[in-house]
Length: 499
Ligand SMILES: *[C@@H]1O[C@H](CO)[C@@H](O)[C@H](O)[C@H]1NC(C)=O
Image 1 (tube, rainbow, N blue to C red):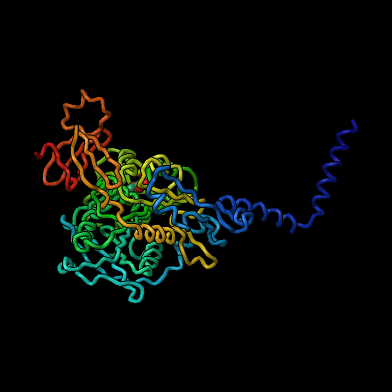
Image 2: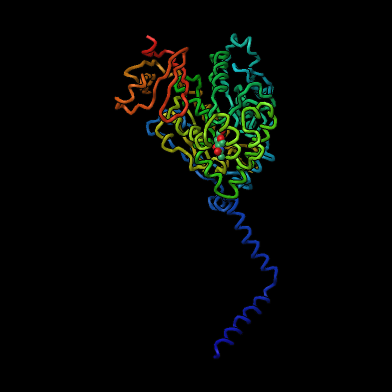
């Protein structure tokens, strides 16, 4: 038996050799392993940027081949046909999020606040940008508004969850559009921006009432001013609900949906996936708990207050708040009815959607590629990097890529005459379908069943029942929704029930 001692001495020799290597070299090796782990954990892309010569990655555009919006407008947008390179020292979606949260290079933007009381007694803070040298602002108040015939475009910003006119991304966008000379309005959600909740109602992912009311008011105050709409995060979800529900009947010249969650059911599953996602889920719940504590007297009446206090993540928070308030049996049922992906096909005005594939909150798995592609009014732009809203660019990280892209899109759109709602020529009700004739020869069909009994003997694949038709509002029940939704009547539509 000579082998055993030989092999033993071989290991011994190896061990003795290993001891001869200075410990600092081991430390160095360990550090390299650590760096690789952190690099992967933070989803950093410095090497990718380096190997592509810091040119960034191309932006992917998804649209219908016959999209006039693409041919007339987006094809002229240089930024959307370019590349996005993130600030080199912010080469990770998570570092971008941290920088956005703690610094953000926020530009100086000053607002003039207009308090608006909604028909149900709620209070909204409407913040108009007044950087004197940067913007012209309407001086009109609600009362003298109708005399104002300002033709200057107005851009309305709808912030995300717990966001308001003070948020970093809102100020970047407000600053840019005010510099362009447009009037900028931030529509703070109920209870946000320092105003109290004054009615038994708060905002959530599908609530379009306040947006509709304010837009109607602005349109009557400034009938000549083109209205543009930008929604971010949950604000983008609400924006698509509004545009999808009202179809052609919106006085909107163009819209942009930035980092939309699209499908809260998929987002919810994503939140459980790993450590990072659970961290964001907790952070979102903490932010929302702050909102609730500010409005304890009202919120404790409308929600499961104890549950909110105990909630440790976004889903638990939703279960005690939005679900209870909106009267659903489960969070999933509530989330299923909150999918803007099912409404994006019904949007009838030019809509640009921007989303980053590395968004750590609204996962790219929820992006409705096909739904965007089949709607001629929608162009979807996706970037490889950018995170959830930051999209910082430049060495000093003082600008956001999507802000520039939206600015260019709206500017080109505004320079092209006759877009959006103005294209409608007529709508008539024919064989249970609403047929809308557009100026460019396209017909839009939306089919409803006239009566519930018709349901059995229909072979048209109709999903809707008209329940009532009164006071300019048509109430429709669709098979896939638990609650009926109200649609306003098209102004020149002729409904059989009304004849
Ligand atoms: C909570 O509700 C909001 C809509 O108000 C939705 O966007 C979000 O995805 C939901 N989150 C979870 C984890 O269910």
